[in-house]
Image (cartoon, rainbow, N blue to C red; front, side):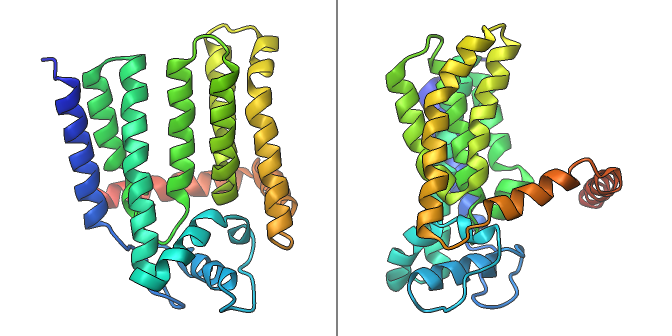
Length: 258
């Protein structure tokens, strides 16, 4: 059964709004132990540092994720830190779902887009971190934006690449893993038999903006920790014991949930 696009999008938005409201402010203890998210106090410290209310920067990699805490700093004086984080991330949640819906609809159909967008809103990472004191939602939004770019750009258009590049510039300031959006484009093009040289040409512009974003963070934040954070992570990535432990933990958690 086919469903009208406006009806489907309304349903998707409604589920996203309800779900973000039900999970609004997860991990919302300030300067203490969070309810759900271990990372939350570090983002609060970064916000307070940006407002000159805290003398010490949080550890890496939290100090490099300044965009959401910076936006929250302006709102927190009016609605409080918890609510400011919750509001900004709920808006990002809603935007991500809408962008994701549009992209999937273009690539497949309305029914697939509806189911996919609803499942996204009800995925465990989004429910835990989506409206919390966190920056994860910004990374999800960047990935959704890359998917929308893929769905609308069968030919390379400089205008679209610049728009995507600007979005990645700000997203990476907020969540460094947003740069993976470029990887999504690279892999998708290669799997769809796009010429590798043409693919490299396509990702050059967003990559330039991404590098500019990293340099901007280095200017704004003392020792943001890109090298200190990513290099050890790269060295530890082939650790088979760590991989098996994560697999066991995820499977065990899944059994408990079921």
